Image 1 (spheres, each protein chain N blue to C red):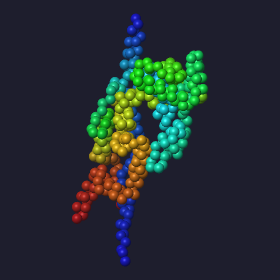
Image 2: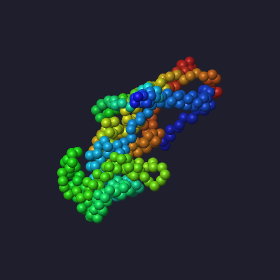
Image 3: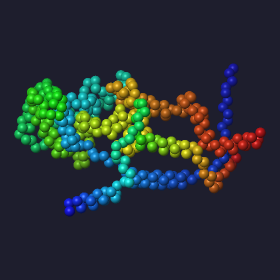
Length: 70
Length: 318
């Protein structure tokens, strides 16, 4: 049974492996001199979303919010 | 007499509205969210795990390139051998910003003699077959001009052969020396020898990495992964992993003229980035630039509730 230890090993590797494998061939977009990886574009997009959310989301109105002491 | 403009008196800070704010609570929540995100994303996506490129893997995968590079190391014509500081004193090799050469000013700090460090010493340190002992003796006894003629002729013959056995010629002991070096590399011995520094932990990869970078094998692997300088490689990572997006401006300069074709690109781009960083630090003192937040009025968007209430209050008073 030469294949048995291999199948156990492969099973263990599959069990601990990350569900999403990003180690394949990279994807890139080209726009003139600009060359960007899709992964970087996603991260830049997420950063912009967080920035816009930080601008637009209202501040939570907590307890004890005063209207000034003066 | 000129009348001086009087600054309006500063408002009393105590007159502004206040709100309670728990910094410790916010810090704890933010730390917990970041920790959960880090663990969660690492579990789902893992991290880059590319097989290391070593002298052994290079010699096994592309022996022709290894041999050709070893000849240039022996002859002192490789990129490392002619780099200048911090490795050697090659004249006019250092990059300059105008008349200033910071590379020369820093001096030779990591002395690398490619012929001795990469080829001759590893051959002497390994068990020597008689043919290699004889080749080493012949090499050492020859004048530098003769040595250069041998390596140059063998480099040309290898280039013409294009991977096949080179034609016969006057190569001296060079073919024997590089063939033995390739054997050592394939066995994995050369990696250990170039890394050995006489200390318990071998953590200095400078020499094996320099040898690797002189060949075209590492370069072709880097190009396939979009990691070369002319591919915006500074901000990329292997595979589909996100890289260092914040280095976009630094790597951008390498894609355009005059930097793209300049031999001084590294020094010039460093100077440009230093200047821009200085400008960023001095934003509060640069007229016009320092007024941008006032013109863009982003703060009014963030504090829109306050400004709306102020407008309502002003309307009521009027």
